[in-house]
Image 1: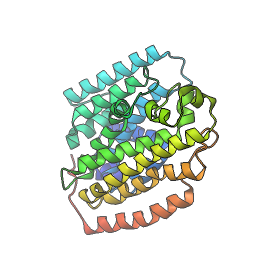
Image 2: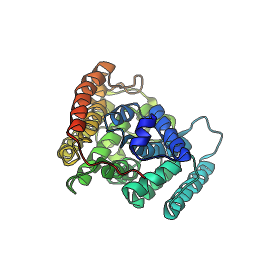
Image 3: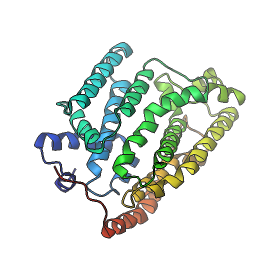
Image 4: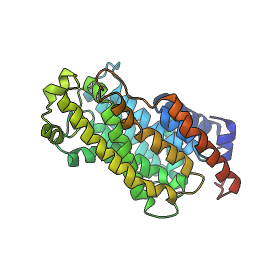
Length: 311
């Protein structure tokens, strides 16, 4: 992270700057599309978004590190102790943890409800005990905590001009996560999990043993096609929310919407062969989206807007 971004955000403490940089590294390493979109924000907003994604990525590392020698029980204890310490740090207003220091600062700066983080940590704990979900209502409980609340956490930083922006952010966060589930069926099976509603799969004749065969049968392809339609409905419902954000935040979220929801287009392009190929948005498409978004971002900054106060 550049010193310019940190200074623009009013972050001057050396320890705090180091923590924000650690969060940026986590976001860059594990969230290529999110990281690219974050670069479209004004410099003063970027560190805070890196902090939120750094927090989420660090928790993911605890839960999903397949190289770890820890048992799921030990991972649950580590996640619980780390999460409890973070929540206590929020209450006391500071943290010494190399990741959480920046996150606590972000929470306090933008007055982000701590309930969002509690829901996130609960979903991470579910990953260590739940291997599949019977229906979409059950899956939604997980998705709300694992993804939707991250969008809700971001909204204050994006400076909404209407309260409905939170509802649309929720829809977009769910769409992102469901697109991820569709793309990552094979990887999730490696972890012993299925993030597709089993009752909806059964309508197409798909069950867990069929998924475990890791062959994209006509039944599985039909089931994935149905899941893609839900992503597109949610993505469509989320669109009005982008105009409800401060103009200098809109190019970032618009680019993220196009690129991340575009994952399902790529699943279709590989004919749903998710067990043998990874659906990725090609670099040409990323450039096609990022270029105009960058110009819109520059124009919005030139027009000016509310400044973030320094400390």
